[in-house]
Every structure is written in structure tokens, then in C-alpha cells.
Length: 165
Image: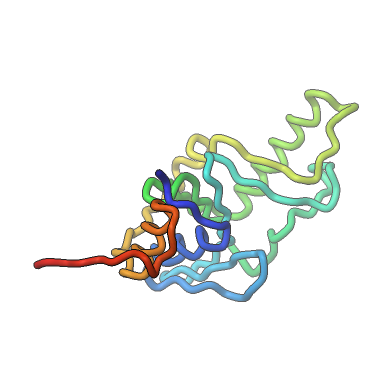
């Protein structure tokens, strides 16, 4: 059974895998500063896709939510915790792909396509040259208890961990 994470827990777990990284600000938008000083918007998904909200459907006129001057990259992380794929992509490149994908999608059925939530699929194929290694850290005993509690459908206080060395 896979450990279940809320969206926030998932982002916190990913942030913990980035040595020296810190979250900047609060709210729904996750901007992180990496140890090398780069600022990235963290986008996550269980599947090989990411989404963005826009103000209007038209790719030529839309403002993409969160695509502002305070970030220069998107850190797209997909998959289950334990088997993640990550890509650190220049924000302009992600924006171009979003706009091109939306235009293609709208052209397929112009009368019925007016969505302001856009998706990019096949992130691994689209951005393979931007693959980014996450350094997996050892989990704390508290995190291990939480994960085991989810697995066994109980609470962390019911989990006992013994270590022999």
C-alpha cells in the first residue's frame, strides 16, 4: 500500500529532499529558493503532468497564475514519493509549452474549447533535458511512524519502532 499524502504534505516531503532549499512566502503558491540561489515555483503531480490556471482561455492573451518575475524556474515533480521524477525548467520554456499546448487543444474543437485550467502532459518527454536529481534524505522516526500508521490504518502513537545495531 502506498503512503497517502495531502498536497501540502507532498510538497513538504519534496522540499525536505532538497538540501539547503527553503520555501519563500506562504499561501497556495509554493516558491522555493534552491541552495544555488535559483528561485523556482514548485508544481507537483502524481502523474506525468502539471497544470496552471489562467485568467482567460486564449493562449495569446492569458496571464498564467504564478508566472511572475520572482521566479526563474519551475520545479516540476511527478510520481509517487519514493519514485519521483523532477525537472528544473526555465519558466519561459514552461510558459511557451503551456501556450502552444493550449492553442493546439483549442484548435481541435474551436467551438467547445474555452478552458482556463491548462495542462501539460508527458512532462518527462517534454522536458527530459531539464531532469533534476532529488537527494533523498533519511526520514525521521516521526515520519516513519506517520507513514506506517497510514499503511496500517492506525495512528502514529500506536506504532513502535525498535532499532538494533
